[in-house]
Length: 260
Image (cartoon, rainbow, N blue to C red):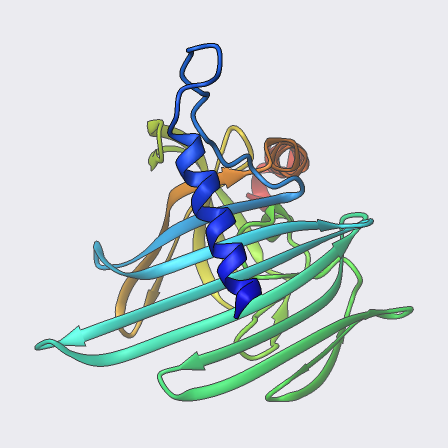
């Protein structure tokens, strides 16, 4: 108890001292919390038919030679003020040298719980899901939108059930989307037809700017609301994203008309 009281007193004393003028008569510098090195967060609002129903948050963490990405999506649809549908998903991805190493996804889709687990092996990536075990090539990526390899035509992993399929990707040109702090911003739109069908937008910085898909519950969209954290880490991630997007657009341009 004495130790807890001491810690409380020291904290209170520090807070009081911060409000006093400095010894030279000048006001002390404002207290600010610096972004934690190696950590960044991007948050999206989840919309249903244009109305906000939840949030989708991505946290990026550098650990040694790996990038760990944790995403959490929470949404709820109400009818006459009562919950009619709930969705929650937590996905943890680890990446090394641009390749997926591990994936753990936990989904509660209105009471139906599923888990998907993927691990990189010498033969590619092994996926365990509700439907059993599957093997895909090492370039496979989860359909979590943030990673621009989503539009490269490599196998996509549906994080709800573990199903995989190389998608058909169609570039749809530039469109304006609303970005936090920037307003209307041009982003490249792509239609992706894989284990799930959706449209995804990436802006010129390489940031995932929007996603949209149709469900039995209506049109669902993810739109960005905030970007924060280590600017060096964000710059590194977005630089790789821009290269992937540019390669996708170049491939589409070079494709013969009969294949477009």
